[in-house]
Length: 286
Ligand code: PMP
Image (cartoon, rainbow, N blue to C red):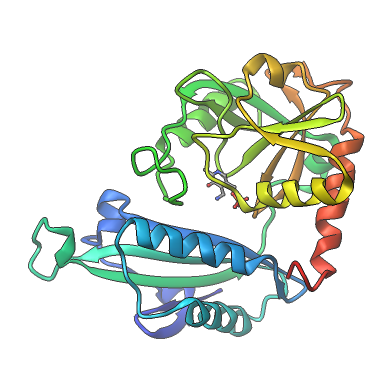
């Protein structure tokens, strides 16, 4: 892979930051990830928009506008030579030259990189559906409760993952402050019941793959709503799937050793997943 940092393109192994960087010390950073498929970015404009929204909320500034960041990302991918890439743009608070505790003294650091795309779910998992465990831990949205800021805070999600592994599941779903379903380590979740889809409305990252599901549903004439999703509603769903940039639309067929629906990947999930990948050849979406 190739990284861009301090104005230069370097091999990933040379992309290093100071341990005094507040991104490292305090998770004081924001980032976004986007994928490249067959050499083309997928919905890059939406990822750039979310990234700039995070920068603004965190009062960080970078020496590039949207077009400049887009160019840096294209260059990283071209230099990496990957036709399928996982691309990240990030900005940390940086470090203060005087080691002061005032964030205004820190010099914000913009970086980007492109590495080989590796899906979070393997073909066998996509075929049979993932096994998920509901963690009793709460997802604490990063940056107090402004989940629209995409941040590296994952302590709760990682602890949820270990809970899941202890329960012989492959990944975890965490709850929100009211005990409803929130999100998991790197993904949003959807439930389908009687042909209608729902996904948690609040306390979750507004995922771009989640947004893509809404767009695909609108095109397919399916009803999809953002609302509170209780644990009972999830367990009683006909179909469940999770969504992320790094995995697309991924079926879930078992939750805490209980089969979802008939335990097989369902027709709505399959239809949306196929439509999602078909959009990778649609210029309007790339
Ligand atoms: N929730 C969290 C906590 C995430 O980290 C991610 C992806 N990084 C998502 C949801 C999914 O978002 P997207 O579809 O934009 O990748």
